[in-house]
Length: 378
RNA sequence: GUGGGUAUGGCGCAGUUGGCCUAGCGCGCCAGAUUGUGGCUCUGGAGAUCGUGGGUUCGAGUCCCACUACCCACC
Image (cartoon, rainbow, N blue to C red; front, side):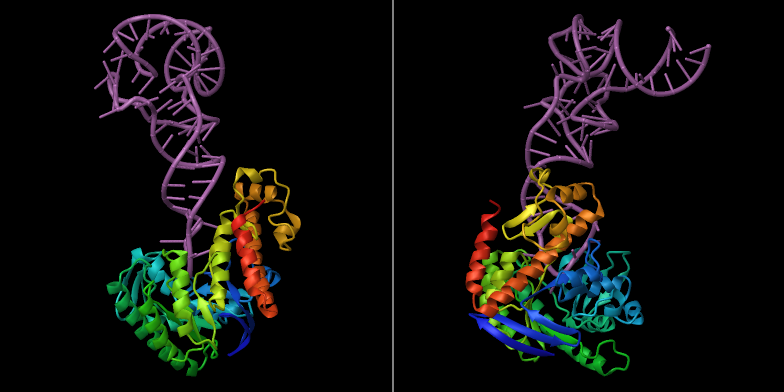
């Protein structure tokens, strides 16, 4: 992997990452396809058409179904889903948080009950890395615990210490697997994850500690899980400078267009979020003038596209009224068009961000977009 | 025509021996939430002269009579 820093503006970074599956221009928004598909009937062909650079898939979910051994036997995730560009796999760490009701955390790892059929599933650092190795993703994420934002110091501190021990085990395991014959992707990279809730000194100490492991990239995890925007931005302000600046920095699970602009401004390269796809399925669509809820009655006879001038499939051909009708009638095409629009919007937003960084006008661009997003539709 | 049944917000229903019914629920409708995705979930809100008319009673969605509409069976 090669990380080439092309330009900076304040802390904001414009970079190019070369991987075995091709180049990633950053800042980038990764499109979330948990179960090896973007929900909403979006194909990988669609993704190529809307500027998707990286697809994000999930270790836990693919392990449960269809099984990582099956994916390996089918030639790896790339071949399986017909996507030859970069893929990042989330480790299953977030499921420690999101499936809190059906798991137990121990030093060796996490005992889940499958959300599909209830069978016991054990996942520790070695298991997570092995699964991700079978999937053959471009970037594997370390297996961590994502504690709730409101957790107290006496919960966060031991949790973060365990996450560090898990990270070292992940690193050892991926290095071991790299040497094994038949590994799907011997060039697979491991990114470490910083945790610490909203407690400054824990965040910083942890960032310093994991930076020493000299991994190819680092993520800030455990944000946007209940804390305020101000708290999230503050943690980025104090934490990101303690992560290597000559490597990709990934803010996990974030966020709204405004969150992303603020993240870029604080030195983040990679983002991902379920918002464009999940909200699309639920009829919420993004524009430069804020988010619209297409279920709202005011769009019943609105002949305009979702956003004037947008070049996505939905906006080139269909009205708000028609997409609203499809969504209300639960026609799959409604979801599909809304999701395609949202992903296009996010990918296009990142392109605008990169252009403004190239030109040295990011600050101005960001202020304008944030104002426009907040003002809403005229 | 005869006998039986049913009529409660847009739809489907619940309403116990008449009294916490100032009429409840599901869907739908109108809004809002959702941040490393369990095609979910959650939170608010609007909307009903309880088919019509009369009667009994201190009090009727609940009981009685007539009428109307629909459903079923028989002729």
